[in-house]
Length: 281
Length: 315
Image 1 (cartoon, chains in turn green, orange):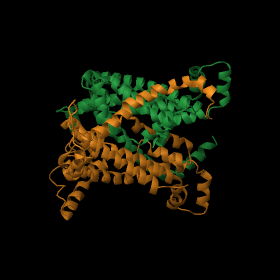
Image 2 (cartoon, rainbow over the protein chains, first blue to last red):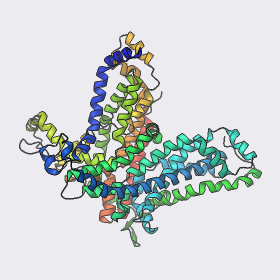
Image 3 (cartoon, helix red, strand yellow):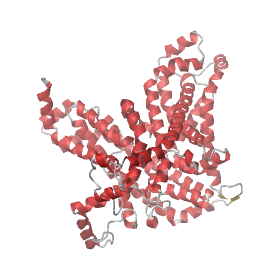
Image 4 (cartoon, rainbow over the protein chains, first blue to last red):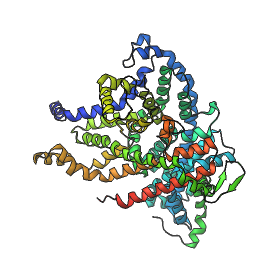
């Protein structure tokens, strides 16, 4: 109880700061409000009353059922790409980082330099020849193309972060494991992975977000509507000539749900992951 | 901890090479090989098929005389300057949140800030496209309702821009002169994905006691920023700027979706990445697109170099 007057006085002294912060946050959240509010209207209602939500009695739920039917297959494709891609990317990166962190074998210095040089290369420059590579591998119009490219693109950053982390793990653990005759693979599974849970989680979220939000590569790789990921699906929807804004906004909202749910369960990793993403430069 | 190995140990540890092989194979196939192929094909006239035709440096000389490409570098430079202004709200917000005395509110605001960020970027983009709509859009309704439009129209009369008219809705994305302003406004208040959180991380080392000491000395809010917070977030500002610049210079998704494949009416929103994409996938000029890619790569490398050289901030 004693803290509550103190809290109120703190709130009063910080009042103007709260106002400014709330102002900015409300503007940032405004697009989401519009998205939700318009998603329950048909075009006629929207034109009459664009700003305020209508009463729940006259909500147009058919917008939402339309959106679900349209978006859920796209979400399934995107989940496949992002989950497979993230898992493979991190597994390979852990092995690679273990290689660099444990011993200095011949050529590992050159290999390391070769990996680091890639950090300078903007991926956008590569998109034209990458398309041709995928074409010659007969990977065009497949989801595997997105998985493979995503895995390759994530290697450098993930190995870079994980190497430093593995080098900081206590050396005694590895030596003890070696005494017991553990192979390198066993050491990875029994020491590295259990001990680097948080950093793997953070990297996984960054990599997942990257693959989830990508639309430039899917746009040139995918042709069949069955294979569309969220990005391509939304672009396709935007290209419709006569726009039913209610349906479109409901579709946008459905497209945002998976990440909102993921965020709800991993809030802490998210905040840390996004801050760590800063170090990517 | 990695130490050179003796010969004998090397014979035992050679299996470790298998650990790097998968990563290496992926990177070679999907990063190094395309990069090499881009360099190689930038000297060819190549429509993407089996036939290619060596033309030496013709692609590059064509690029340097290509008015669209040169204009696109100017556009992207303007967008980079926009980045400087777009960073301000994030800094302001981070400083204000950090100055709050209550840890609970600091956490609540952080969470609220992350929420708009986890909506897919494309969704935000399309909602803004909808906001820009001349007749249905929120932006025009807002300007009408607040009377700002009359101000804009009278300013237009004063300076003779020929852009804003009293009797017609403002055509944000279809009026050439308004393309760049639209690219500036979109995403207001530009609270970036990582921006605020990076700044908050930088501010973490300032304790509440420092503020209290400053208050005892009668230091005002602005001076507090200048002398306490600003020096501490300089490194973060530079980091943030580097990220924004690399993203802006190489990016073209925004222009592709907000405008179109030609950078909107009059090509005012054309950026180098978009022109590369346009040439490759709409004109089948893959060789020329590779050359544009090379030039863009050189440009980004130069910017990174300048940034490291001159924008150095030592703590």
